[in-house]
Amino acid sequence: MAASGFSGKTAVITGGATGIGLAIARAFAAAGANVVIASRKKENLEKAEELIRASAAGGEVAHWVLDVRDAEAVDRVAQEVADRFGRPAEVLVNNAAGNFVVPAARLSPNGWRTVVDIVLNGTFYCSHAFGTRMMEAGVTGHILNIVATYAWTGGPGTAHSAAAKAGVLSLTQTLAVEWGVRGVRVNAIAPGPIEDTGGAEKLFAEPRVAEAVRQSVPLGRFGRPEEIAAIALWLSGEQAAYVNGACIVADGGAWLNKGFLPFFDG
Ligand code: HXC
Ligand code: NAP
Image 1 (tube, rainbow, N blue to C red):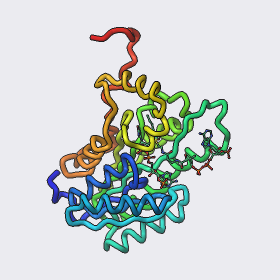
Image 2 (image 1 turned 90 degrees about the vertical axis):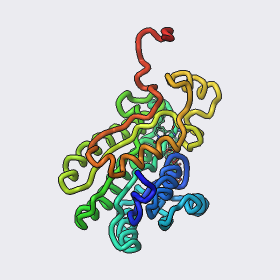
Image 3 (image 1 turned 180 degrees about the vertical axis):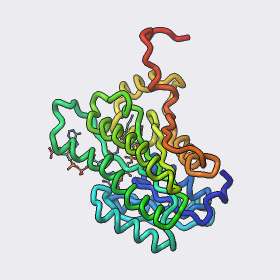
Image 4 (image 1 turned 60 degrees about the vertical axis):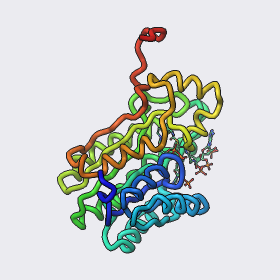
């Protein structure tokens, strides 16, 4: 997609102040879009806004303080964004997530509820608020959900997040069909382990764990946020106009590395 491909369009990225979301926000800004980032911590949003503005190619950059678990607030922000830019946002990236490592036997009901609320419920609230406005205005839109490959495999230590991501993947497929007929595509990206993110800080903090994770990736390294952002931009643009209901895996081949000859090195 040429840098001008998103001129005049608006992309909203939840959790866009850090990690993968920030890289996605910068990529849309560099492609000419108006960029809105939305999450809970104002200080992070303000810092990120400056970084995104430095990448911008003509579009505006704005932030909204938002907890995606609050359906009413989500709806209000979707309307305020539409009012500010004169039409509903064309792109929504459901990137916000909460996660922590805990054995399922020690996960409290509130711990479960918290992660499912952010990841699954938050994704639905945002998709509904922004997606219905796209459809009512006749906007050709794109909703992109950031999931994880443990949506298919489950993830020991992350039962809550894996179950929620599986739900988001299913939602991606349902909405792609329901809303595709009205001009809104819905897709997903499943990143593998990505460096320089809140996820890496939390899940792979111990060097021993990080090294084991690295070794499980056939390409032998962590991914970079910018590599996920490039896919997000492509999926949201004209060149992917026929891609709907898909999930692009970007994990260096890690989730396929499950043969029963673990010592086989090719
Ligand atoms: C056990 C925990 C816990 C932990 C929180 N809880 N951390 N339980 N182990 N490490 C429990 C609490 O005890 C509480 O339950 C409940 O969860 C809610 O906790 P709060 O702190 O009140 O929640 P809140 O302030 O809303 O914060 C949400 C959060 C927090 C998810 C807990 O970590 C957060 O805000 N995270 C956002 C950033 C983030 O996680 N980024 C990583 C995304 S990466 P009780 O029962 O005590 O009341 C990612 C990687 C994917 O998803 C895959 C990689 C391959
Ligand atoms: P991150 O840096 O921690 O980003 C998560 C963002 O979500 C934060 O900016 C946070 O901002 C926001 N957020 C959390 N709870 C929120 C809420 N209730 N309402 C609004 N915003 C909220 O994590 P990341 O690693 O870049 O993860 C980004 C996405 O990629 C997530 O969907 C994650 O599951 C997925 N993923 C990551 C990896 C990885 O290796 N990093 C692998 C697979 C998938 P506030 O705290 O300001 O609210």
